[in-house]
Amino acid sequence: MKNIRCIWLALMALLLGACAPVSPGVPEAQAVPVFWPAPPDVARVQYLHSFSRADDLGLAKGLFSRLRDFITGAAEDRLLRPMAVLEEKGVIYVADPGAKSVHRFDTGKGDYDLIQAADEQPLPSVVGLALGGNGDVYVADSKLGKVLVIRAGSRQATPLRLAGGVVQPTGLAYDAKADELYVVDTANHVIRVFAGDGSLRRSIGQRGTGDGEFNYPTLLWRSPAGVLYVTDSLNFRVQMLAADGRSLGKFGRMGDGTGDTARHKGVATDSFGHVYVIDALFHAIQIFDQQGRFLLSLGGQGHGPGEFWLPAGMFIGSDDRIYVADSYNRRVQVLRYVGGAT
View 1 (cartoon, helix red, strand yellow):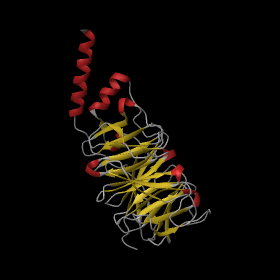
View 2 (cartoon, rainbow, N blue to C red):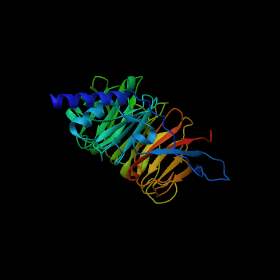
View 3 (cartoon, helix red, strand yellow):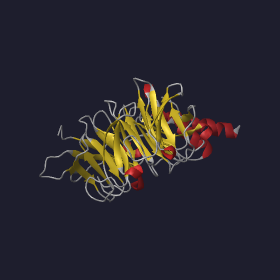
View 4 (cartoon, rainbow, N blue to C red):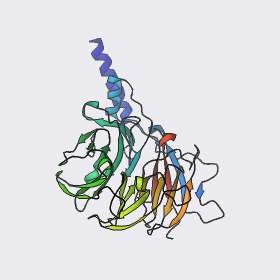
């Protein structure tokens, strides 16, 4: 009876805590605002804030997470090695192989959850995220060789049944109109395109150096216009493809100079069509126009605002906020394009 009473009191405390008001996330104050390029040039990109924990966004753990912590012990609630990030309507998902989980920060509801597979099974190598339909989020785990889905409101990731499967899923993208999921299979140097029921619709590419061919492709971005941007890792380039795999162009090369793509990771586009490419060799983000011409570099190695340490994935929202998984700084940095069309 004493144990039951203790559990009951703990549950009541959690429930009361869940009803307590939560302060909205407030970005940390900056003594000197950070812009790129630096004044007196016209600003194009602004640093907004960064976060590593739910507390940084003014969030509290959700009731389910607190119940789990009470029963099994507290789980790590900070970013350990973030690799991919996305945001939709104030909900931020961060894929974190360091924590073997996906973090969900819900700034609207004011709570936080740590998401794994069914029965609290870890996700050892979560490296890719993509927003699906109806608030679903697709997750790629390259070690498990699986693509999973986090249904809207769910607290676990459920494996998808994909015809033929994939060996090493990494980059993901989703076409809502066609209900098609694009999956980069790095080990097979190919992009698989699956229908909503998991059937294979087509495959794009093969190993090679020609247009539409890949050498260990990794991450993927689909622009609102339907253009696919693929980081073609060991060909040291970004390829632009149509939905059917037709080549629309490419840019990048091996090197350590401005505009080179020696160790490129995340790729994304903003509402003006600028193409952002993370390069871990430079610990920076490079911005190109739609023809692949270099425009601007931002960042550099360090731990301060707007500095990076082996950044990985990125996401750009409809409001042109730029979310960067700053992997070895164990944080996500949030920037924004403010410069208008170029």
